[in-house]
Image (cartoon, rainbow, N blue to C red; front, side, top):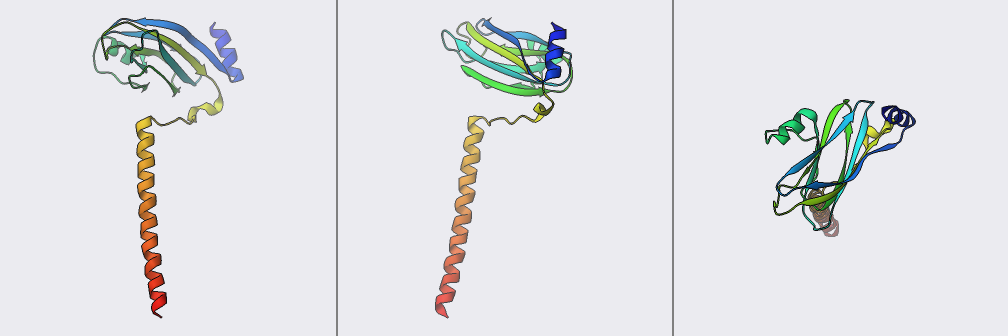
Length: 171
């Protein structure tokens, strides 16, 4: 299996590592182990809650942080989604090692979540700087700030033009 992954990695491709339904009990989380022992890759993760809709969070973390997460201790997350019914993320992983994808169903704590989880590894020299989309709140903030700045510049320019026009008429 590892030889096949390495051959595909050399060709520059996408390798599906996990594609299954994960059952996460109420108020619990499940960790899915990833062993990345080859050259740098981009971890692409997509999930969707099946059946009764529940909000879950999916996160990528290193082995030590995954163990700390499992024990309820302080941990660092490489990339995570907010609690939602479906989502996706991409994260470049430059350091070979052991990683975990955590599926967290602790928000509502009312029932089991059945989560379709797909994790792929993307191998290609130019993938380290993949463009990503902003979360909805940041998109809204960028749009609002841009509009405010645009109208401020337009108002300032308009006042300058009117003042120049008035000076011109007075001559």
